[in-house]
Amino acid sequence: MKRVFLVTLLLAMVARGGMAAAAPTLRDAEQLYFQSQVADAETAFIAIRRDAAASPADRAAAGRDLARIQWLIDRDAPAALASLGDARATGADLCATAVMNIRVLDESGAPRQAALDARMHAADCPGQAQSTDLKTAEARAWLDEAASGTNRAEAVAAAGEALKTLPPLAEASPAAQKLKLAWALQATAATAALEAWKSFFWLTDRNAPASFGIDDAEVARRFRDGLAAHAPAGDQVALLSLLVRGGFYNEARRFDAIHDLAKRAVGDADYGRITAYYDLRATLDPAILAFNRATARGHRDDSAFQATLTRIVADAAHKLDPAATDPRVPLQQAFGLYGMVQRTGGFASLHAGHVVQDDTLRIEQFGRKGEVRFVLIENMISNGYQSWLWDGLAQSGGWSGDRGTIVQVRSAYTPGGLRALASAEPEIANRLAARQPALEQQDLAALARTPVAYLPGLQARLRGQAAAQVAEKARSEARRTGQPYARVYAKLYWDAEVGHSITAHEGRHSLDNQQFTGLSHLSSPELEYRAKLSELMLAEFPRMPLFNIQSSEIGSQTPHGQANTRVFEGYLHWMDAHRGEIAGFDPRVPTLEQLDKLTDAQIRAVARTLDPQFASPPA
Image 1 (cartoon, helix red, strand yellow):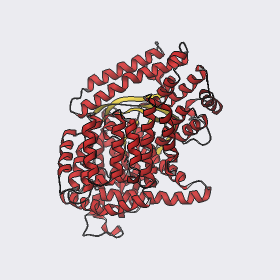
Image 2 (cartoon, one colour):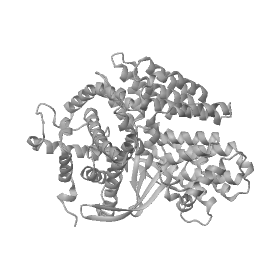
Image 3 (cartoon, helix red, strand yellow):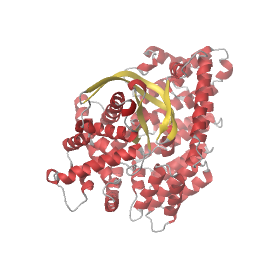
Image 4 (tube, one colour):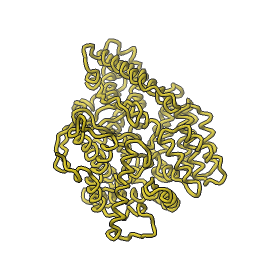
């Protein structure tokens, strides 16, 4: 299972790295949370928040992290808002705090207050990236206000105004385009709805993903006719079916409610299938949330949860096809749903979303070849317990399924290029540079305790180097094609990330699982270790997988944690044995802290020396 590490804001990420003397304590507290030790993390966040010696950035980050626990897990809005008030009082990272405060207000039933709060804090969010976060939070709150039935026309109009002021960086953001689609459906703006739909999927030469099996003219007709004045129920149901197929659940329910289709479409067979999807989500979503919250507080029951999932899915499939023997088949045929139930990170988890792409992909790695099915899924119903707990900081990015199938979670990858692009904005770049010395001090403190550790300073340098490499290629490509630089950058970053994270990483899993079967099967840590080495050897920009592997899971006993630790142990030993071959190597600095001095060719070559496939060729 591939993990993809994300941040809600680059500034929030840096704040979590912290500043000054208390930063390692904050890092350790967040590692506890990331490793699902919620109670211990909560205690640490409280201590940091109360520590007058801690830096303002540390105390602000601890307040936000504590608020995440109080809201996401405990649903305690007053406590979360109080923690965010304390975070704001530090004066540090005000935008990240404001955005979370808006979220809690909105989700706790005060969307209008949340939207007005967003307007008050515009000055706290300079730069395109922060402005995008604030404006999308405002628009989401206005749309939630409209859905409540209170002043709907006013709220829809206010959401539209907020979306109109989004900066250019938001044009390639699926999250922003999803909100534009939601607004257009509420405003019955057919042209805008179709454009937002296409932009969400990054479509340029067609109106829907090929896997939907709907031609371009029909897609356009559904938006045009379904959003026409006084549209018949049949045309609205046709549009509703398209929305459900794409996984736009909340948007579909709201469109349905506005047009009273529960009464107007009685007896329509297509609407009957849509209500089966509604019933599935109405039972599945709360069951998942209840399990996640109980698990976070140490009261998990994996067996009962898996039994509940099996029953709910079977019931939904039976409504669609009473004769179906495999419940997955009718669900994928009707709604494009694809997923699995498995243990991820040691926790029972459902990973399921809507298919965007379903193709045959050729995999070739070092003499081993195979054809695999590649499935790209989006608008996840669930991406496992850990992804829920991490709340946007990271998520599962894909897996290897039955018979060599490679599955990619699209939403785990789309933000990467946008965030890398935003890191070049002067406001963010200056903050990153200002905080880099503190991160590097954390590195030295960690390496004083152990030779291999999570090194946020090294990770930040690798991330910046990779972003610069993509930028160089994107500038050249933009000049050659005349396309906008930002769009070219985001697409190149996407292609590179998918190349190493899916084709290389998940492809290696598929090949290894085909070769090593029965008693010779490889353990999860071993599979992850080998897949990460394939990433490093085959990536277009090897620093991209390297900064992902250099993660806070190093030192943990999860499969990824063991694999990451082993990778960096291997690099440490190679560097110590080849110091003379590393340009600029300084013997006064701990070896691993200088890993970013390796060339791309060296990164690839070291990974090859570590790969058991080359040490012991397959029989």
